[in-house]
Amino acid sequence: MHSIDLHRILQVHLHGISQPKYPRFRYGAPPADTFTIMPALVQPTSRGAVRLASDNFQDAAVIDCNYLGTDHEFAAIVRAIEAARELGNQRAFDSVREIEVMPGPKATAEEIRELARLASASFGHPVGTCKMGVDKLAVVDPELRVHGILGLRVADASVMPQIITGPGTNASTHMIAGRAAKLILS
Image (cartoon, rainbow, N blue to C red; front, side, top):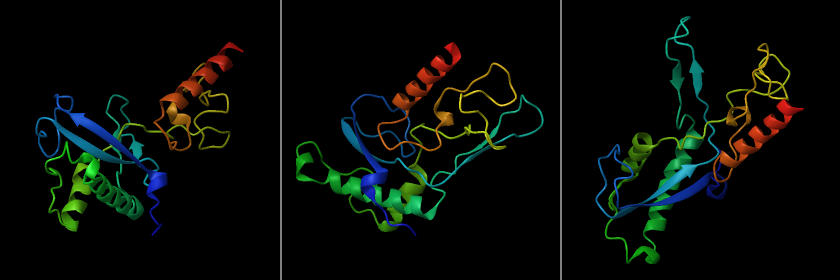
C-alpha cells in the first residue's frame, strides 16, 4: 500500500450549517447552528466507468462511480476523517464547539471506517472521460474535435487526463473553453 501524504491529497472544507443549505444527510439532518469539517480526497486513485445499458440510445447509461475503490483511497479517507476530528478538537474551536456529532467523540476505529464507507460522496468534479489524442482510444484530437463527427468539439473537464490538485476544476475548464473558442475562430 502507498504511504498517505495528507498534504497532497486532502482538502478540508469548513462549512457552517445554520440554515437548511444541506437538506439531506445520510445520517439525518444535523442539529441547528453546527459546523462540519469535511475532508476531501483531491487525487483519487480509483476509477469508475460509464457503460451503455443496452443498444437503445434512450436507455440511461450505467454509471459506476467506484468511490473508495482502492485500498489506498479508503485508507486515505479514514486518515483524513481522523485528521478532521483532530482539527475540530483544537482549542481554537472551543468557543463554538460543544460536542462532536458525527461520528461521535467515542467512535471506534470500526465506526470511523463505517462512516467512510457510508458517508463518502463526490464533490462533483469528474474529469478524464474524453481522452485527447490521436490513438484508437482517444475521443478528441489535440484541437478538441471529436473523432469521426464533423463540427463537434468537447470543451470541458472531460478532456483533462486527471483531476488537478487545487480549488476544483472551474478555472481549468474556463481555460479549456477559451482555447476551444480560439481554435473554432481560427
